[in-house]
Structure formats: C-alpha cells, structure tokens
Image (cartoon, one colour):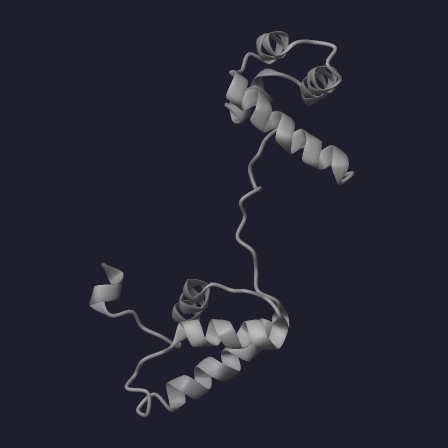
Length: 138
C-alpha cells in the first residue's frame, strides 16, 4: 500500500496529514480518507514517520531499501577469512565439518557483535571456503 501511496500522493501532503493527525487536529478516519489507506497502513506509515522525526532524518515515503542486508565490518571479514582458511586447510582433522555456531561465539567474544551462524555459513559458501552437501541444499 505504501508504494502505491508514494505514487498517488506527494510526500509533502502525506507529511502534512501525518503531522495534523499526530497533533490530534484531524481524526483517524479523516487521515485514512485523505491518504486513501486503511487504518493499519496509516499507523505503519505514522510509525516510520515518527522514527524519522525523532532521529532527525529524512522521511522517505517509498519504503524500498529499509530491509537491506547489513554488511560485515572489515575486521570481522578479515577474522573470518583467517579462521575459515585455517579450518579448510586443517579440515581432515575436523572431518570436513565447519562449526559455524562456534565461529559466531568467537566473533561475539572478540568483537562484541552477535552474528548468526547462518550468516557465517553463507559467507563461507560465497567465498569458496565451504560447499553445501545435498542435504543442506534441500
């Protein structure tokens, strides 16, 4: 609904309506009517708008790009390259298995950042350190 709203209405108008609604100058029904959205969409848009107002950032009506994947820090990437290359080189001792949960814990202990084990697994696959088995692909 928000993408359609961005095509339908100018952003200034949407911000004006949200400001008036947030100041209790217009009712919920009127705001929904002005923006031609349902009640749930109005509150979702209002929540995003309020976050931008509080953090002093620009509000963008079109919500694309808000769920972008986060990239890993350079020092974490370097750490992963070091650890994964060591494990791959010494894989005969580990029976060809990688313990991504353990690497995730090591990253948390060393850098204080929590990274999910699947993120590390996808990184290892992308960089060529690890190959998925048929069971994992399914």
